[in-house]
Image 1 (spheres, rainbow, N blue to C red):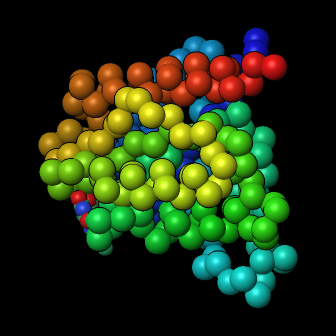
Image 2: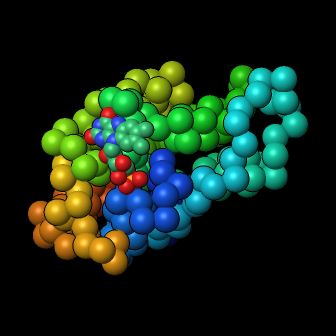
Length: 186
Ligand SMILES: Cc1cc2nc3c(=O)[nH]c(=O)nc-3n(C[C@H](O)[C@H](O)[C@H](O)COP(=O)(O)O)c2cc1C
Protein backbone atom coordinates (compact mmCIF):
# COMPACT_ATOMS: atom_id res chain seq x y z
CA UNK A 1 0.00 0.00 0.00
CA UNK A 2 1.89 3.03 -1.28
CA UNK A 3 -0.61 5.83 -0.66
CA UNK A 4 -1.01 7.30 2.85
CA UNK A 5 -3.14 5.31 5.28
CA UNK A 6 -6.37 7.22 5.96
CA UNK A 7 -7.44 7.07 9.61
CA UNK A 8 -10.80 8.27 10.92
CA UNK A 9 -10.76 9.29 14.58
CA UNK A 10 -13.61 10.03 16.94
CA UNK A 11 -14.05 10.58 20.67
CA UNK A 12 -16.79 9.24 22.91
CA UNK A 13 -17.25 12.56 24.68
CA UNK A 14 -19.20 15.61 23.56
CA UNK A 15 -17.69 17.76 26.31
CA UNK A 16 -15.99 20.90 25.01
CA UNK A 17 -12.94 20.46 27.28
CA UNK A 18 -12.91 16.67 26.94
CA UNK A 19 -9.62 14.96 27.76
CA UNK A 20 -10.40 12.38 25.11
CA UNK A 21 -10.83 15.04 22.46
CA UNK A 22 -7.44 16.29 23.62
CA UNK A 23 -5.93 12.86 22.95
CA UNK A 24 -7.29 13.05 19.39
CA UNK A 25 -5.84 16.53 18.90
CA UNK A 26 -2.47 15.20 20.08
CA UNK A 27 -2.83 12.34 17.60
CA UNK A 28 -3.25 14.92 14.80
CA UNK A 29 0.21 16.26 15.73
CA UNK A 30 1.78 12.82 16.12
CA UNK A 31 0.41 10.99 13.09
CA UNK A 32 3.20 9.36 11.04
CA UNK A 33 4.19 10.87 7.68
CA UNK A 34 2.69 7.95 5.78
CA UNK A 35 -0.78 8.48 7.26
CA UNK A 36 -3.59 11.05 7.43
CA UNK A 37 -5.95 11.51 10.37
CA UNK A 38 -9.41 13.06 10.09
CA UNK A 39 -11.52 13.74 13.18
CA UNK A 40 -15.27 13.13 13.13
CA UNK A 41 -17.52 14.73 15.77
CA UNK A 42 -20.24 12.44 17.13
CA UNK A 43 -22.39 15.44 18.17
CA UNK A 44 -25.80 15.16 16.47
CA UNK A 45 -25.98 11.39 16.09
CA UNK A 46 -29.55 10.55 17.21
CA UNK A 47 -30.41 7.83 19.69
CA UNK A 48 -30.67 4.54 17.84
CA UNK A 49 -34.22 3.33 17.21
CA UNK A 50 -34.46 0.02 15.39
CA UNK A 51 -37.85 1.02 13.92
CA UNK A 52 -35.98 3.68 11.94
CA UNK A 53 -32.78 1.79 11.10
CA UNK A 54 -33.61 1.70 7.39
CA UNK A 55 -34.00 5.50 7.31
CA UNK A 56 -30.76 6.72 8.92
CA UNK A 57 -30.28 10.43 9.59
CA UNK A 58 -27.91 12.45 7.37
CA UNK A 59 -25.40 12.49 10.23
CA UNK A 60 -25.44 8.69 10.51
CA UNK A 61 -25.15 8.33 6.72
CA UNK A 62 -22.13 10.64 6.78
CA UNK A 63 -20.58 8.77 9.70
CA UNK A 64 -20.97 5.41 7.95
CA UNK A 65 -19.57 6.80 4.70
CA UNK A 66 -16.53 8.22 6.52
CA UNK A 67 -15.91 4.90 8.28
CA UNK A 68 -16.17 3.00 4.99
CA UNK A 69 -13.81 5.42 3.23
CA UNK A 70 -11.21 5.12 6.00
CA UNK A 71 -8.48 2.48 6.01
CA UNK A 72 -8.44 2.41 9.82
CA UNK A 73 -10.27 3.77 12.86
CA UNK A 74 -8.93 5.49 15.98
CA UNK A 75 -11.22 5.79 19.00
CA UNK A 76 -10.65 7.89 22.11
CA UNK A 77 -13.01 6.66 24.79
CA UNK A 78 -13.82 7.98 28.23
CA UNK A 79 -14.99 5.51 30.88
CA UNK A 80 -18.49 5.99 32.28
CA UNK A 81 -19.60 3.80 35.16
CA UNK A 82 -16.85 1.29 34.39
CA UNK A 83 -17.90 0.96 30.75
CA UNK A 84 -18.24 2.57 27.32
CA UNK A 85 -20.08 5.96 27.37
CA UNK A 86 -23.56 5.89 25.85
CA UNK A 87 -22.58 8.48 23.24
CA UNK A 88 -19.92 6.18 21.82
CA UNK A 89 -21.87 2.94 22.11
CA UNK A 90 -24.87 4.58 20.46
CA UNK A 91 -22.74 5.87 17.57
CA UNK A 92 -21.25 2.40 17.08
CA UNK A 93 -24.72 0.82 17.20
CA UNK A 94 -25.98 3.30 14.56
CA UNK A 95 -23.03 2.62 12.23
CA UNK A 96 -23.39 -1.15 12.59
CA UNK A 97 -27.01 -1.36 11.40
CA UNK A 98 -29.17 -2.45 9.66
CA UNK A 99 -27.99 -6.04 9.92
CA UNK A 100 -25.69 -6.79 6.98
CA UNK A 101 -24.68 -3.13 6.59
CA UNK A 102 -22.08 -2.87 9.35
CA UNK A 103 -19.73 -0.03 8.35
CA UNK A 104 -17.03 -1.30 10.72
CA UNK A 105 -16.69 -4.73 9.14
CA UNK A 106 -13.03 -5.76 8.76
CA UNK A 107 -11.69 -2.34 9.81
CA UNK A 108 -8.48 -2.16 11.80
CA UNK A 109 -9.22 -0.22 15.00
CA UNK A 110 -6.99 1.38 17.61
CA UNK A 111 -8.28 2.43 21.02
CA UNK A 112 -7.03 4.98 23.51
CA UNK A 113 -8.68 6.63 26.47
CA UNK A 114 -8.22 9.15 29.26
CA UNK A 115 -9.97 9.37 32.60
CA UNK A 116 -9.53 11.26 35.83
CA UNK A 117 -9.42 7.94 37.68
CA UNK A 118 -6.52 5.58 38.33
CA UNK A 119 -7.55 2.91 35.76
CA UNK A 120 -7.28 5.21 32.73
CA UNK A 121 -10.39 3.74 30.99
CA UNK A 122 -9.09 0.14 31.12
CA UNK A 123 -12.54 -1.26 31.86
CA UNK A 124 -14.23 0.76 29.10
CA UNK A 125 -11.56 -0.26 26.60
CA UNK A 126 -12.04 -3.96 27.30
CA UNK A 127 -15.81 -3.60 26.88
CA UNK A 128 -15.19 -1.82 23.59
CA UNK A 129 -12.94 -4.65 22.41
CA UNK A 130 -15.78 -7.06 23.10
CA UNK A 131 -18.07 -5.05 20.76
CA UNK A 132 -15.43 -5.28 18.04
CA UNK A 133 -15.57 -9.05 18.16
CA UNK A 134 -19.22 -8.98 17.04
CA UNK A 135 -18.50 -6.20 14.55
CA UNK A 136 -15.66 -8.21 12.92
CA UNK A 137 -13.14 -5.44 13.49
CA UNK A 138 -9.45 -6.09 13.90
CA UNK A 139 -8.56 -4.32 17.15
CA UNK A 140 -4.90 -3.47 17.60
CA UNK A 141 -3.49 -5.00 20.79
CA UNK A 142 -0.49 -2.82 21.61
CA UNK A 143 0.33 -0.38 23.02
CA UNK A 144 -2.57 -0.01 25.43
CA UNK A 145 -3.03 3.74 25.73
CA UNK A 146 -4.82 4.08 29.06
CA UNK A 147 -4.26 7.56 30.48
CA UNK A 148 -5.04 7.76 34.22
CA UNK A 149 -5.21 11.07 36.14
CA UNK A 150 -5.70 12.91 32.84
CA UNK A 151 -6.02 16.23 34.68
CA UNK A 152 -2.27 15.98 35.46
CA UNK A 153 -1.28 15.19 31.85
CA UNK A 154 -3.44 17.57 29.87
CA UNK A 155 -3.21 21.29 30.52
CA UNK A 156 -6.05 23.81 30.79
CA UNK A 157 -5.75 24.59 27.07
CA UNK A 158 -6.37 20.93 26.26
CA UNK A 159 -2.80 20.13 25.25
CA UNK A 160 -1.35 16.73 26.16
CA UNK A 161 1.80 17.82 27.97
CA UNK A 162 2.88 14.47 29.39
CA UNK A 163 5.72 13.16 27.21
CA UNK A 164 5.10 9.50 28.06
CA UNK A 165 1.48 9.83 26.95
CA UNK A 166 2.54 11.56 23.72
CA UNK A 167 5.03 8.77 23.04
CA UNK A 168 2.34 6.12 23.59
CA UNK A 169 -0.02 7.88 21.16
CA UNK A 170 2.80 8.08 18.59
CA UNK A 171 3.47 4.34 18.99
CA UNK A 172 -0.23 3.52 18.78
CA UNK A 173 -0.49 5.38 15.46
CA UNK A 174 2.67 3.78 14.08
CA UNK A 175 1.41 0.32 15.02
CA UNK A 176 -2.04 1.07 13.58
CA UNK A 177 -0.48 2.04 10.25
CA UNK A 178 1.68 -1.11 10.19
CA UNK A 179 -1.32 -3.26 11.22
CA UNK A 180 -3.48 -1.71 8.47
CA UNK A 181 -0.83 -2.32 5.81
CA UNK A 182 -0.39 -5.89 6.97
CA UNK A 183 -4.13 -6.56 6.79
CA UNK A 184 -4.34 -5.03 3.29
CA UNK A 185 -1.70 -7.40 1.91
CA UNK A 186 -3.21 -9.70 -0.71
C1 LIG B 1 -21.47 9.53 34.01
C2 LIG B 1 -20.01 9.47 34.38
C3 LIG B 1 -19.46 8.29 34.80
C4 LIG B 1 -18.08 8.21 35.07
N1 LIG B 1 -17.54 7.00 35.40
C5 LIG B 1 -16.19 6.89 35.49
C6 LIG B 1 -15.59 5.60 35.62
O1 LIG B 1 -16.26 4.58 35.66
N2 LIG B 1 -14.23 5.53 35.66
C7 LIG B 1 -13.43 6.67 35.60
O2 LIG B 1 -12.22 6.53 35.63
N3 LIG B 1 -14.01 7.90 35.47
C8 LIG B 1 -15.35 8.03 35.40
N4 LIG B 1 -15.93 9.26 35.22
C9 LIG B 1 -15.06 10.46 35.21
C10 LIG B 1 -14.42 10.64 33.83
O3 LIG B 1 -13.15 10.01 33.84
C11 LIG B 1 -14.25 12.14 33.54
O4 LIG B 1 -15.51 12.78 33.58
C12 LIG B 1 -13.57 12.38 32.22
O5 LIG B 1 -13.22 13.74 32.15
C13 LIG B 1 -14.47 12.00 31.04
O6 LIG B 1 -13.80 12.09 29.81
P1 LIG B 1 -13.78 13.44 28.92
O7 LIG B 1 -12.88 14.41 29.63
O8 LIG B 1 -13.23 13.03 27.60
O9 LIG B 1 -15.18 13.97 28.81
C14 LIG B 1 -17.28 9.36 34.97
C15 LIG B 1 -17.87 10.57 34.56
C16 LIG B 1 -19.21 10.63 34.26
C17 LIG B 1 -19.80 11.93 33.78
